[in-house]
Amino acid sequence: MAKKKTTTRSARAPQADTKAPTPRHKLTAPETRVYVGDCRELLRQVPDCKAGKVDLIFADPPFNWQVKYDEWHDGMPREEFLDFTYNWLDGCIDALTARGSLWVNIPDDTAAEIVVHLKKRGMTMVNWCIWHFRFGQNRMGSFIMSKVHALYFVKDPANRTWNAEEILEPSDRATTYFDPRTHNKREGHNGLRVPMDVWYGKYWGRIQGNNKERRSNHENQLPEVYLERVIRACSNEGDLVMDPFLGSGTTGVVARALNRRMIGLEYSAANAGSAFERIKAGPIRVGQGAINQSTAIFAPRRLGVKSRQGAGSG
Image (cartoon, rainbow, N blue to C red; front, side):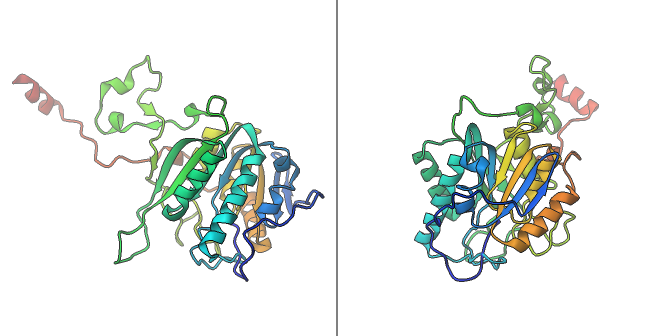
């Protein structure tokens, strides 16, 4: 996430310079570019964004929760924060291709405003997913928050990139309840299904200090498996993926590992450098089966042979 901790800036985007900015960091094969600056400016300056050539955008923006990020002030007055949010959302919409998809990772207190704004701008919501985790911040005054919203919007629902076969996972009906219908050969999926809209399981938790994926000096780092699901489902190899709040670099790591071109925008030069080093180093879990690690609530319920025979004899 791109954030600052100095004096509060205006929520209005600064005037975009007509001169194309220069990437601070670059890689080739696939092309990966990291720009440093205010995403509200860069979304209107970077040539691919300005020309509407981005195929997939994943945004994990500042939550305005007083978090001490490197340079971003994470405590704007509420109305100013909403104006800031609407401004970068508009820049993302303009940066997308006609077939493009926009994902936004956001908590309860701003999810509704984002949904309403995107619908007003003509975007269509395909899914309102939930990223669920078991490690929430302890509190006594209310229920502990254990989720973040993953909002999936497109410009044209009839003409969007969607790769269901890339994200199939074992069905609970097959692995837990052993329903023979899940192995119907006419369906062709042999006990697999598209994931449900609540995401949890092994490798899906918040990235804590002892996690192998953990990047030091970064708050609210997302797990690679989250981005792997989004990028596989909503883009193709060679497509252009963009993250307006690059932060720890998870989007760039996964996009590059899956042979997508990548643009990352980051307010903090230090965070941009750290993210770039992580992108060069490569992923920890991508391609290792982590995407199929969603888990059922209950243990498998298959009956033993004798039990089945006894149940059928009466």
